[in-house]
Image 1 (cartoon, rainbow, N blue to C red):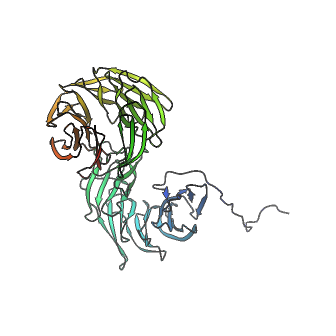
Image 2: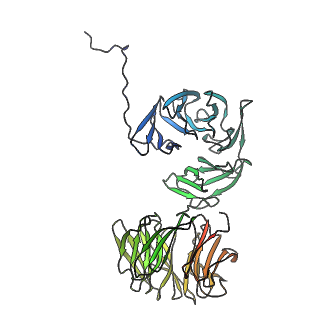
Length: 563
């Protein structure tokens, strides 16, 4: 008897039980379903639906080759996926029913590869973009499961279109973009046609990697391989702005999302995730939702918009002179008159660590570096100390002894390689944090109370008891200009916007002043404090100004300019 299985015999299929793995090479391939409970992503020919809170997995199987793109309708009812196939062969798009986890329709028109997919806002249409061998854009009716119309995606003298996004409000408008091409399309359903309009970017030639649409369709944003972001107006088809001008995103802007609260969430090819806003597109570290204050024995954390106290940290019989949040948001670093630096957890107020005997005559100023690896402290005796902060350890790296009197303010440069300290001995010193020595000293006949780097970091501004606001050159410590900052009393607090266009000051005249940096003129004055203003800050994203005064008042002001 022959043991061989005859070809006619049916071979049973193995059932897939679980999948471990994630292929990050499918652009925007990781999606969160609108139910906020499931992640959807492709792996090879399969699409996984993974429950976020449990280990449950479902699989959508039907593609004959690797999945190349994925889209979820806004209602969450449908999933669409496209695949690659061999040159000359048709590549399938599959429309899936999310609830039933089953295949609804197979849509075949494109050749070689499906580049990108997008659903219209009310689940009426699906638009698909073919790969480099295909080059066409097709609009499909979801109800009829059939193609309505198609067109070449890009003009003749430009590269391929690789991204597509639908309007957030209208089912008849979508945008395609790619290598040197940005087009806004209108669907003309009665005539079964789509009409493109080329967007004008002037001299800028860019390859688009990612695309995001504002909720109200007012603008759409394009992330490029160059590492900058273009903001386009879909009505006028014109470029509104582009940035960042310097410090572009390394390895391109690979993902971009418009947030309901305003601003953009941007992901770069180098693995960086940042929050930024037009027109500067500089990363906004921190949040305007929370702020912290210190007075006497207390540190308090406040919820900005409701003015509610969220947390109170108390160290009995001590006085807190200064606080700073670590950039990762995991600790509040504080300076105390008993010479100790204390770090607290911002959610619970738990004491995380103490640096004993940090300074002889109390810790008077404190600052942290953006990489969360160092704390820089200033003392009543005038020493500036650099501390290395590890997971379990806090180590003194260097004690810098130049100031003759207490350190009043410390600011760190963005790249963490330099900092400036202001002191009541009439000097400001710019320190090299790599070689740990003095770079430059600034002298004035005043007790310096506050100092700020201009965001371009080639100038600093200072103020103090002489009521003058001085602009200084970082490179050689020369004074550029002096402004009369106040008519009476010292200026104690100062902060500058991320763009460097405006700065704010507050002092013993009880007034909050907003200044134009270049003009050197006051644009707005806030009257409200009845005590001497001790410190002042502008929130990330320029929504609020918060000022505190010696009588214990905290005042929140609306920032006068829209960012």
